[in-house]
Length: 348
Image (tube, rainbow, N blue to C red):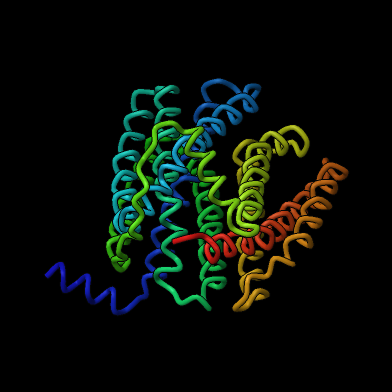
């Protein structure tokens, strides 16, 4: 019966649809829980420590990507990417359940540990999420598929950021309720991942290496052997750095310059996420069937001008709304050509 049900849903929707649903729920969960932890820690340690709290949370969240992304890429080359996605979603359910416990016992350190584990799961999931795209769509649809994937990712950030702020408000800052919601969302993502079509392993014989610096070095060296692949990888990573920096500072900026609350500052980031989703779709449409790297310098100049504008009009809420939206639009246009180029030119 279960197999028949799975076959029915697989026939009704494509694997790309289920991949989008799965990663949408995961990205939404990441943003709900990350912001809820920040609100919880600001609640118990005071608004005056908000910058330190957000910086620490940001560092804890980024660290697993530095430590485990290369190893996760090796696993994606050796094993079925679909199976890795399913196992990552199962881990997410367990981690979110632990989050309920962390809030129940009122442990700030426990929250940081859960945040680290959540980021580790995301680092494990990421290479397979992007690597499976060329395996489930035809080559002439990769740019559009990437645009959709990125659009849904940032739509998830929009919804997750809204829900984190909304749930914090309506629940009277009852963070256990938020953790329960995250667990339910993780379970839905786990179920959705089962409907992604099986993809065979790429056949790589690479072995896992615990020496992280060496793994990073060898990966970069291999990427440099392909024309412009390393440059594209650095370009994509740089955009992620800019996005993380912006997200890390948007709440302190809203509190100090715009005189908003921490939760209201969280709502402000919705605009950036909405812009990135819009920019991603625009990049996919402008690229068509080709990898259009010519969009990158145009988008980069747009981001620079927006940042200057935010600084110049730092006390204007209306300017902040417009410029944070535009930062997102240009960011989406900036990153899609790089991600598509990496997928097209990377060795199998």
